[in-house]
Amino acid sequence: MFRILIPVDFSEGSYKTCLYALRLAAAVPEARLLLLHSSQDYLADADPIPANAAGLTPSEQITERVLHRNELEAQQRLDVFYQDLLHTARTAGYTCQIERSIIQGMPEEVILDQIERFRPSLVLMSTKGESSLGRMVFGTVSTKVVQETDVPVLTVPGHYAGNSINKVLYATNFGTTDAADIDQLRKLLQHLDPMIYCVHISDDPEEDREKLLALQLKLQSTASENNIRYALLEGSDVSEALQDFARSEGIDLLALTTRERSTLDSLFSPSLAKKMVLHGQLPVLVFHSRLPV
Image 1 (spheres, rainbow, N blue to C red):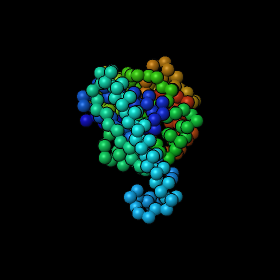
Image 2: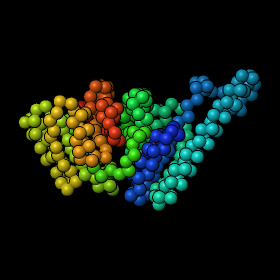
Image 3: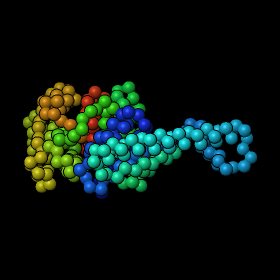
Image 4: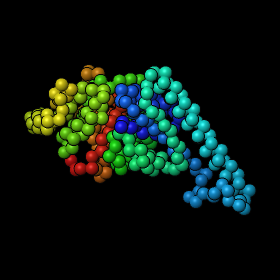
């Protein structure tokens, strides 16, 4: 069953991400979407006082009332968010099942716990633009999720207005898991049947041409040649070259693979992934490989 887990914070970008998820799941029979909100209240102590505890001091009673009110408000906002999305889905004729859940705790811990429980095919997360990207994509939450789950994570820019996935660019650096990741990408999006462009930006075309051919041979046993293309591009700026290619070919989604925790920072800090997400205009699908490059 095709399942999508969507952490939500009731922002406009979060709602747009949910609409993106609806379109992504529309063609899949019995698809399920889970809207997940983590309610983190900074008034709560590490050992919260039970609401029914006797002998609370006046200040503790006030704290309990505030916590209870905040919890109710979060639940009400989630209910309104859910009902709006459900109405949109039914009006559009989508038949996917939509669920909601609110859980107290740190966002990254709640998301990882729910990944284990819900077992999604995909996690969708909204990014709110460059000013908050460090907190959302390269901060604790997304970094921890990417590092500690094998589930693909798809980030959607808050300003993104696209509504289809017809062309996907997979940026390869000839890692050992690229063939498996591209095959996983094809299976994940098979109901959409997109054209996949496997692209490498080269500073040594002769050697890289052989590597690209080797990757193509690996994929031939599983990938239809009708929906995958290969391109070797030259350029001094990898991010700029990929963005130029994406614009010229009308790419709808960028996909790439991260590596082990030890190299995650070096990958996301000065190079391709960070530049594409910080300055690019497209959703980014991140696979996480636990195997060395």
